[in-house]
Image 1: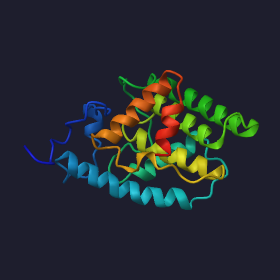
Image 2: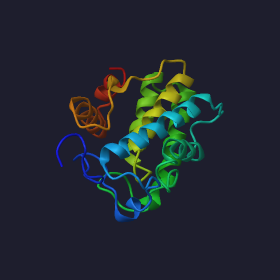
Image 3: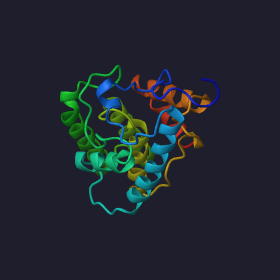
Length: 199
């Protein structure tokens, strides 16, 4: 089919593909095209983001909060929102390691904050990168962890990030820059991701 409607599970090359079990977890039975899925997710994300900015939590740096955040962002669209992925991916760690690695990432972030190891932007961007690398959820990892980065950086007294000022779910120049910045961070160069976050 031409135009902007794509088959539902026709993924961009750098998006995490969904397995058969995850496809069955779609709550909105009227969705048949990727564009419709994106629209349903965006409506849910908008509502979840409003919740995230209103909630007053002492400790954002916790597995429980990350799971709750993901559920708020995707719970109207996906049955398993807020649940960790159970399947291997080409990105991310083994599913059994997710809780341990999240605990380590949050412990590191608390240490960075307490000891001012990095400036606030860098703490939040490094945490975002770690969470993306862990890839705890079947889908929505980038969107969830970018919001987590925003929440952390605001808690540290800075403005939320702009993340390229575009929708990063769509294939295009901004998403290409974002993926390249994540890959640079994978190779211990956090500079491009820091720059992208404020672009």
